[in-house]
Length: 347
Image (cartoon, rainbow, N blue to C red; front, side):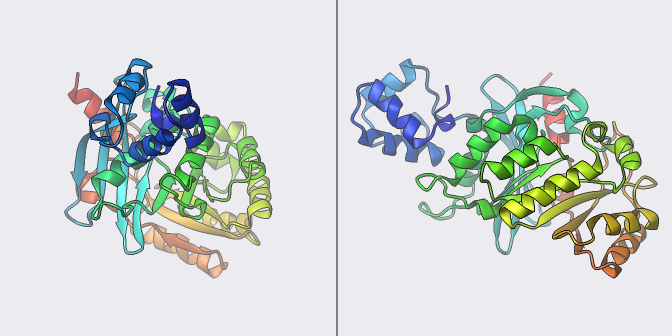
């Protein structure tokens, strides 16, 4: 049992059950959300810490095993180990406006998108709320400049896994990381990326979340998208568009569409025109992404000229778009790649 899985109210109940005064709950909650281990919790009695240990409560959910830092732009790639021996990864990207952490929500992924390394092993298991939060807590601590400041300003749920496939744990994480008593990261500074699990998009809106919804679209029509993203057999492009319009009507938040530019697949002018028609009148922004090469997948990025031409078509049709800047090129590893290499190193 990981303490990071619990809200302050839940930790208060745990403290009461252990026969400790209620004020200890806030002290404990503050320590664990700072990334502290039991031996560092200096204002807690040793007898209380022993009770927590004996009851099976773990102080931290993950451990940083390795950090690779880019000499080009300061991007950091993290390898984390979990209590059960599984390995996940994440990325810290440094911008002028602050630091953004990319977190994983599952070990592996069941979606098996044609360009992604995360799905090569299938879905191993879901991460708990505390294991997702643990990534933020650990990286925040690892990058603190001043003791009482927060290093992480933004979160993107775009690492390994499909967040909507782990809905209950992901939404509890969102509440925990947003909690005023904890890291208190605003929903406006959180983005969630989904390949289009439509029923959960409706639920996210109905449950009152107002984060930035990002759709991994990668093709404007069902025929092309099915060859890239198998989930299209269940949720068609038109289903996704209905769901995101519902989300916008509920939240007022502009939708972001991710579009990986794949050579010979989705990078021609005809596809750009189709995408323009699809998004016409939709409050949206398109991120055009030069594809990260994954050896096992065998797909290559579209050429710079094709990407530029594609963007020109979108701009001509008044569709807001940008080409995503490649960060951390010198430390390589598409999503899921570092994890796989680390596991092989450990064999």
